[in-house]
Image (cartoon, rainbow, N blue to C red; front, top):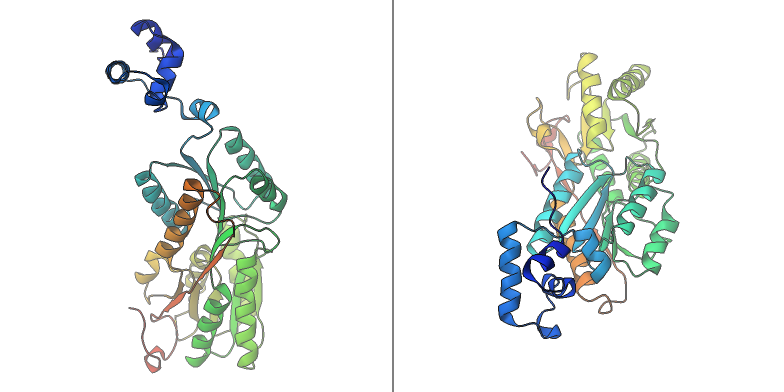
Amino acid sequence: MKKKISIGDIAKELGISKTTVSFVLNGKARENHISEALEKKVLDYMAEVGYQPNQFARGLRTGKTNMIAVLVEDISDPFFASIARTIEDRAYKKGYKIVCSSTENDPRKTKDLINAFRSRQVDGFIIAPPPGIEDDLRSLIADNLPLVLFDRYFPSVTTDNVIVDNYQGAYDAMCYFYECGHKNIGFITLSSDQMQMQERLSGYMKATDDFDGQYYIKRIHFNDEVDSTVAEIKRFIESNRHLDGIFFSTNYLADAGLEAIQSLGLKMPSELGVVVFDDYHSFRLIDPPITAVDQPVKKISENVINIMLNRLSDPDKQKERKTVVLPTSLIIRKSTRNSDRIRVQGS
């Protein structure tokens, strides 16, 4: 295996000190009185031999790695994947690289990831946090590490946040559901204390109260296998045959739910209407296409990375932390009854 070239190897080959090579590498040649000719000689040799600096080791020397850690619930989820991709593209154009990991909503794993990235001197953290890591976030803030939370946040932790109006999005979707003629609407959600899930549940309950309906709520554990989730949803529907509508709180619960509905032979929307919180490309392709609460992924991503880049460029410029709340939109398709009675917003 080819030996990796070090700063020491470069210094020895060119007959100069390792300190000189380091100054050139870190862009400090001018301020340390290194001539342009010598700087060019070092850079040309690095290019010739294909030298690749160790970003983390460099961070230990300079205090800056130009790397940002992004921790999300599940990087394979279309919502988080889209956000991470947009953040990565914008960050790269500004000279930063993204390192991304899935937390699986596990506070212990999240703590381990935070500690691992801290030890590697990343410059900032973008996190969709699970409950139970509040103290770890406060520690990042106390050490002046830029931190932006998105998708969910903790009112007790003073930092920058980018979220959507989950309550209003769920409430509006439920009102539309009732206006389409559905009377008994179930809500399938996660068994979770996460703020965004609680807000979606509150929106469901408030609309149900406003239309004099009854609650039908099924909670699913996040880490349940897909087959188990499908079976749980089937049992819920079979136990509540009078339901004529289901509101899914996430797109991946809807995936399992649509499989359950199909296996039960129920027809949408005549026998069971469906609405989902968080749109997904495949929902347009299903017959009938699925009505969904759309989260503004591009705006979420842009706000997250803009706040982070501003903090990194001038940490003292904006002392006050802010919370950005973005509206959702209801994409109306054909998975509910009498949708022609309502102004169509989507395809």
